[in-house]
Length: 343
Image (cartoon, rainbow, N blue to C red; front, side, top):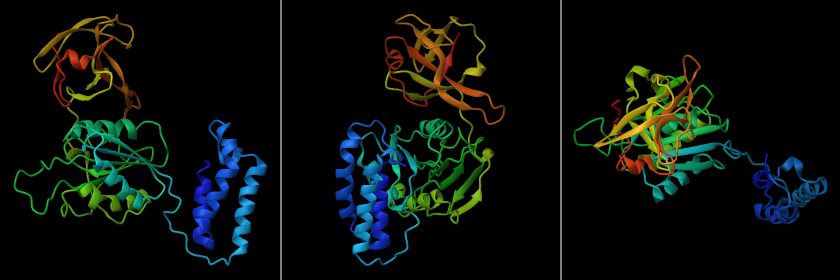
C-alpha cells in the first residue's frame, strides 16, 4: 500500500461518513510532505508513527464531529489494476486519452499505460500482447488492445461493424480483452487457458474501443464473465509467420519473428540477410555486444517468453547495427515485412 492510500481512505470516509474529501486531503499532505521528500520509495507502513496516527486521529475526529450516514461502498472503489492499452491510434493521438477516460469510468483508480503500434499492424499488437502479458509484472493486470483493420469481410460495412471482441486468460492470471483481428492473438493462442468471444455489439460506432468495449473490459477485469460467449480454439487463429519484422525499437534494432532455437549456426558465422530490396552481410552472434563497432549482427534479442509446451525460453532474433541503426541500413522497412536469410 502506498501513500496514495491516504487519498483512497479519504474517498472511503466520504462514502461512509459524509466527510468531505477535501477536508482530509488538506490535512494529510501537510503532515507527510516533509517526510516524503527525504524518504526514498515511501510506503504507508514506513510512515513515522506520529505522522500516521496524527493523520488518522484528525480524520477520526472529523468523523465524530459529523453524523455518520453509512452508504454502500461501490465495488470498484479500490480497484488498483495495471492496464496496458495497445492500439494503432498513433503516438500522442488524443484517441488514447478518450479511451483512457472511458476505462477509468469502469476501473476507477487503475493505472493505465498506452502503447502505439503502426496502423493496422496486428502482428505488432500480438507481439506486444505476448511480451507484456507473458512476462513478469503486476499480478492484477489487464491488456486492452484495439487494432481492427476491418479486413474480415471485404463487403461494405453496415453500422460500422468490425471484428469481434475476445477475452483471453493467460497462465499467470493476466487478462486480455480486445479485437480478434489478423495476428493479434497468434502469439498467445497456445498459452491461453481461456479463449472466448465477448457478446457485445460489433457495430454501432466508428470508435468502438471508446464507445462500446470499455464497459465490457471493465466488467471482465472485475471477474464479471456474464458477457462471455462461444469458446475459440487455437486452430481458429492464424499462426505467427516466422519470417517477419515484428518491431523496430528506438535504437533502430529490428525485432523479427524468427525463433532463435530454429537456427544452428556457430557464433561469428558470416551470413547474408535480405529485407525488401536491400541485401546486407551480417554476423551471427550469440550476444549483442560480441561484434565490432559498425558490424551488422543477427542475434537472439531481448524479447521472448517461456514456451507453453516444453517450458523452454523462446527468444526472437534481432538485427542490430553496433553503433548505428539496422533499420536505416535496410532502408527503413515496415513492420510485417519479410526477413530472409540468403546464406
